Image (tube, rainbow, N blue to C red; front, side, top):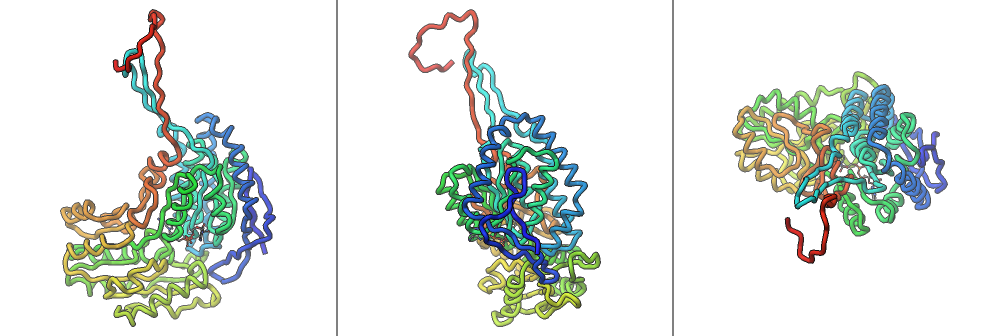
Length: 497
Ligand code: NAD
């Protein structure tokens, strides 16, 4: 069995804690790797390396920082397949989806390549006689990133490329369920010439996270994960004086109006609900069908759901892979088995499902639940699996009231041909990311990503301009250079002109 350690100060660091966690291949159920779970001392070593590197890195010229980022971008481009294969081996998602993940992560590296534009300051001359004012943005210091299992390469890349482009150094604590892709990203950064200590990876669990949240040399924490942990991260890290952005869970609604192209809507519902086995924070987990077309829409979704090819992620024929762990698979299935008792209609039941030759893999089939209502477990919880709920509504007003009453507000979408209705929806809906005939509206790298309500704790969203704001702090400099002809003199008044 392979043992994955840490990456500290530009090199591999073997674990000294003696504590390990299992890393499975979800398609086979085997455990080819164990990941080291860092002790407090190991986290301290990573933070110390980052702190030491910060002295030089924060003073390294923009030209040198961006030169690294361009080299890194090229190396990632050449290694897309290799990184995607690592993702598939530990997460389970199909290779094409893993390649998409790498591409979306690389968008932020590309954004970071242009950091010179983002870090240009502002200057006002002659605000008062012979007085100029400039505003600049400076790095924070050591930034920590704590990331979830469902995007083991993309979510870390939402964070560290921009953070280090801004002059910070970084300590990443990836998900212990699929840590190898993050580790490889750090190795490749070193290969592209990143100075030692600028990017460190400590593997671990709550012990490592808690140390990062309280460490006096960590200035800021970027977190992506589930809502209860995000809430905890924000409370704990802010209590220790850190800047925090904590992106959290979701239950994304897709509103389908009666005038929509129902085949198009059904295709999109399938892609957004079952892609990556529903383990996406932007997955559509609820379709809100408005009006009498509900039965037709459910039929169209069900027809498509029954044809999906489920199998190992490294088989090009597979459209959907397994879930992350056996326990998670069983929990996902329990929502389907419990749904009928609570009054929902199980239209497609994927719970009794195995893949031939992969009987020990963590597979489940796709499920479709109709006539779901608020109050049912399948509606109230983030299932994070291939289970799509359909809620029926009589009118647009009823539908939007339902969506806005959700405790989450990550992404949402409307499917319609009516521009006026779409415009009203985009202004009225309470969510951070809205799609119009786009089911998963993940913003491109140069716009920021973030939800509302219990989908985000903190105020700034991640990447884009918000990301630059988050990883820098402002400084305003007021300057007066006396005119050589100025005689000076004493004036105790308040200078106003
Ligand atoms: P998780 O909250 O269980 O874990 C996320 C990170 O927190 C991991 O690194 C984990 O080690 C750490 N962690 C877990 N329990 C902890 C504890 N008690 N104390 C301290 N640290 C702890 O999330 P997950 O299951 O890995 O990922 C899935 C969740 O992430 C879903 O809820 C999904 O919606 C969410 N997510 C949100 C976004 C977004 O942008 N809003 C993106 C991706 C995933």
